[in-house]
Length: 346
Image 1 (tube, one colour):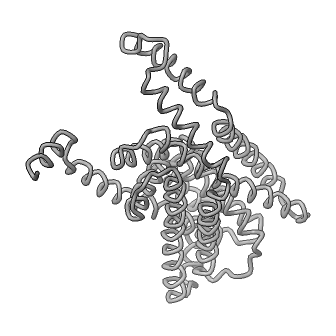
Image 2 (tube, rainbow, N blue to C red):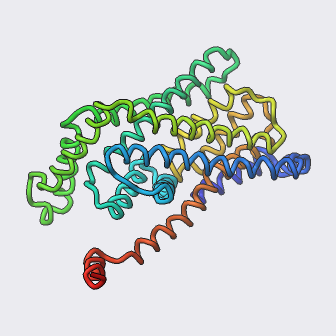
Image 3 (cartoon, rainbow, N blue to C red):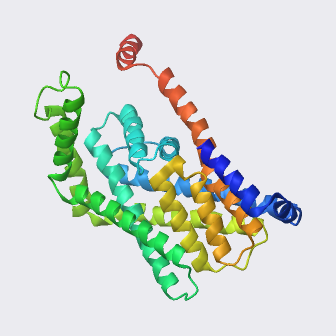
């Protein structure tokens, strides 16, 4: 992560030039910058709030009840993991699954199906946005080949990922097949611990609840309307953060199509590479801005400021929230202690 940040700093120093950067910084309206940059930060927080609300609504459909406060804290804890570990949002979902299970003691399978259903809805919006970006680029004859090639690569990756999620939701054997593959891998590395070739009864029960959760949504499609609306609001508010960053620097001539392209390209690459996107994505964004007519110094500063809002701020806040959630879980009484306490109170 810090190596990538150092590489981006070298890019700014040698390719852009410190003198040009200072000239651009001196020309920024301080009051305008503070107002719009603060609004961009607020937009990121609200975007994640609505994402949390969508996830909570999906869980609620499956009778898994958590408060909005905890949904927000758990979501951001998983988001922090996603930003640090490059595993295409899987690690974040596992983090949320564990936190919800620890609070509610609901079946792992039911919690997982709620989370994946929400992720499917989110990626339908993402993939749709990427295809819209491609259409917008198609009608722009000045679109650089570099941007075209990069966008096509991201579209293919996002489409495959969405296909895998849909396969999990629609195929009853999908989760069982993946669980069996995981057991074989574990048995390869730890043969003494994982002697049995069959899935345990507990695992089979979770897989049954996992598929049953998807069946609830398939048989009651109206239940996905609420989370889908929340997710749509989340993406629109998140997109506004990109616009506000440009406004903070006094850049107000970019088209809506431009922001659509930048938003989905940056978001998709961050999801896929997490902390490895530091430096690489910053340079890619700066290059895209240059190709769209912004001066080098302005492009570099805009890319750095955009990433401070969409990556570094969520990372820092996520770290703080993880400490809060972690402390809360450490201080929470263990099941045995809780039972003894309840017995004493009686």
